[in-house]
Image (tube, rainbow, N blue to C red; front, side, top):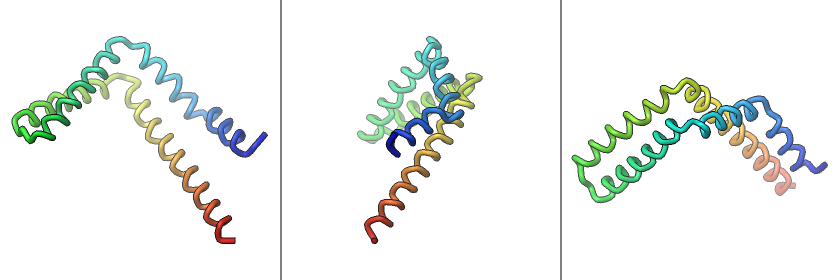
Length: 110
């Protein structure tokens, strides 16, 4: 087994990754939550467009709508765990990338 395959297996078997995948599946199967996510994406696009054309009133309205939807999504019981795990996993991946980059730099210095 190559080092790459070992790393992939280690990541896939990590308890946090496994828990994240289980929660993600529950979230994906939740119709109401998916509707809120889709609505959040729609409002986010409108907010970006309003910012692009500089319409202050629209920006404020879409921002308030976005914040409200985001809070409603965040209030779902598993979302706090999901978002915390997502942050932890992103940090773990960034650490792995930094270690790999550092190793490569040392190899090139030789």
